[in-house]
Every structure is written in structure tokens, then in C-alpha cells.
Picture 1 (cartoon, rainbow, N blue to C red):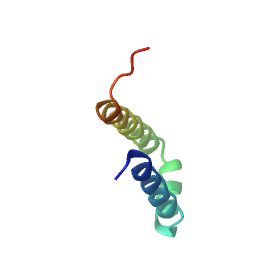
Picture 2: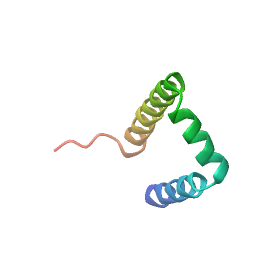
Picture 3: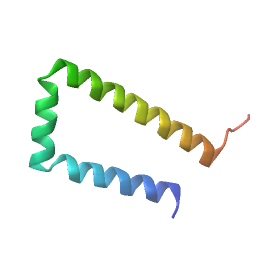
Picture 4: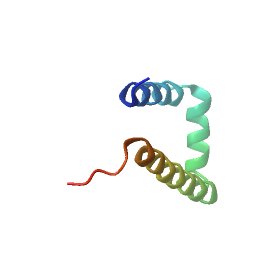
Length: 64
């Protein structure tokens, strides 16, 4: 499976999950709790960083 196809699959799955009523209720509950909001932000940053690390391993560093 190509990287682009995998990215499209992940994004479409995330969009589908975000529309689910239980997920939306959880998001609203986290948004109203400052401690949980901070934990969610830290988790998001961590996941984004790890995704970048994995992408660099897959694609490799490009030298000009």
C-alpha cells in the first residue's frame, strides 16, 4: 500500500470517527475540563511528533 493511500485511509477513518455522537460527547467533555484539555494537547503533540519520526524513516531525509 502506498504512503498516500495509507494517509487517505487514516484521514477518512478519523473523519468518520469524529462524526460519531459518542466521540463528539467525549470531545466536549474534555474541552470543559482544563486538566484533561492539557493532557489531550500533550498527547496530540506526542502523536504528531511520532508520526513525523515514522514518516522520516519511511521517506528518508532528502538532500538538495
